[in-house]
Amino acid sequence: MIGNPQQYATLVWLWGVEDLDREADGFNVYVPSYNRGKCKYDNGFDLYQDATQNALLNACQTMRDQSCGASGCEFGKLMRSNSVICPLEEFHCLGERIELQFEWLLLRYNCGTIN
Image 1 (cartoon, rainbow, N blue to C red):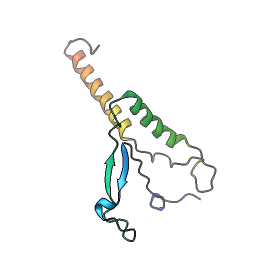
Image 2: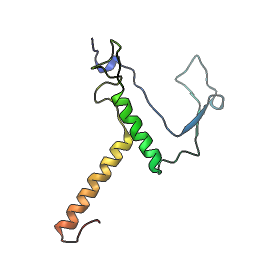
Image 3: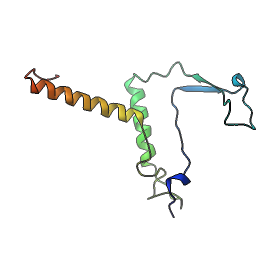
């Protein structure tokens, strides 16, 4: 049986984070939602590199494609349909839409093409 969206846990994946310093913020295990710690970023993480972007895009697709045989999995997939939000995919799509609009303006005013 499949439940409604409120019955599912929200998972958040972070990239570019090296560690979480719990002591820096006075983290209290008995109050876990307060002062969770200070984030330490990975200085070697570079989102501008093609390899990094491809790895993130592949991870998003892997989450969508991952099969699951458990009774609670919907349609044999680990993630619910249309539930994986990948900001980098959205950013790439936005860039494509802007490029298409720019191409249309160039053609409209007989300015040539982007290439």
